[in-house]
Image (tube, rainbow, N blue to C red; front, side, top):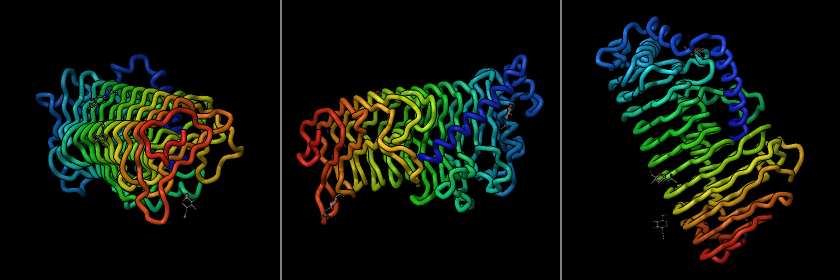
Length: 417
Ligand SMILES: *[C@@H]1O[C@H](CO)[C@@H](O)[C@H](O)[C@H]1NC(C)=O
Ligand SMILES: *[C@@H]1O[C@H](CO)[C@@H](O)[C@H](O)[C@H]1NC(C)=O
Ligand SMILES: *[C@@H]1O[C@H](CO)[C@@H](O)[C@H](O)[C@H]1NC(C)=O
Ligand SMILES: *[C@@H]1O[C@H](CO)[C@@H](O)[C@H](O)[C@H]1NC(C)=O
């Protein structure tokens, strides 16, 4: 749920504030980093490749290999030029991994085998694999990052409690510039599969993200305060949003993504906290939504604290296969009924285009533009939007409130602008 997503981002900010304070207290963070790398991991790995099995990891799926992987990071991050961490075929059980930079060279993590997250929650401070302040990072291979969520999902109380304990996210990138995550599978995370925060120019491609449709808060990829994020040719089936684009996201390019099961491709939730930044320049193209509970969604809290704008959002060539709410702008979003006032959203939505959106909807409302009367949505264009209701007891329809724009070449039932 976006509710917990927002709570979690506040947690991430607090943690980062602590980390930053720790950094500020050190005279020369870069050289300190490499000193400790040498102390933890010994000399740089032979030929620049740190094979975790040569550092004591065991691929039997049972022996804790955290130390070996952590020392591979220390060596690779402390080495100059091109450095590689090799995770060979096999199953490696590991607890929380702290991959903190800055690194001296460029690190590639070659994931040929599978990392299995420990199910002992007492080991975790926050996340499972956390990558902080690393430039030119590559994570690639055909292996899996298995969060082993089924063992702990029952401990998630976020649907019931505001102050719930957040379970570990699987792969977290904080302050990463110029990164690539490709080929790998993210499986059954305890909480989010991937969280991208304060990053710049990161490409996620040919990735598979998989968890059951009823698993709690297992969002596929969440991003916030980041720019230049691309998600390409990726298949996501999870228990919450496939992709969520939070406040402060700009220049985002989502192409060739299949989503379902899941809650769709969402922008938001927006407006809940103070000082949230604008969302702009978002392109979602050539994607398929398969039996997801929502399709293309923009959501903002009706009692938003922040004044912000979501603009220049472009959706094109999207196929709906029995998706619920295929097109939905919801400016009165309020999960778990936590809002105090109504209709007073301070979030502006403008310049949103939907072009060539086709297929079928599992809900009669194929288009819902639910904007607020105080700040109507403007510059909404629908061009060739043709989505039919897949049920037999009703017909496809649009519900549009306070939305301004134009519709051309759409099913006449959907041309509400
Ligand atoms: C991660 O490692 C860095 C550098 O070695 C350290 O400063 C930081 O406290 C560690 N973070 C956690 C959460 O253990
Ligand atoms: C998005 O990514 C696709 C695939 O790499 C590329 O062809 C396209 O030009 C990109 N679009 C934008 C707006 O960056
Ligand atoms: C519309 O989108 C579909 C994919 O959903 C694509 O196959 C088709 O070529 C697109 N049509 C046009 C005119 O671009
Ligand atoms: C059709 O769906 C709309 C919107 O969900 C609902 O309000 C209406 O009652 C439905 N009509 C029938 C005949 O079920």
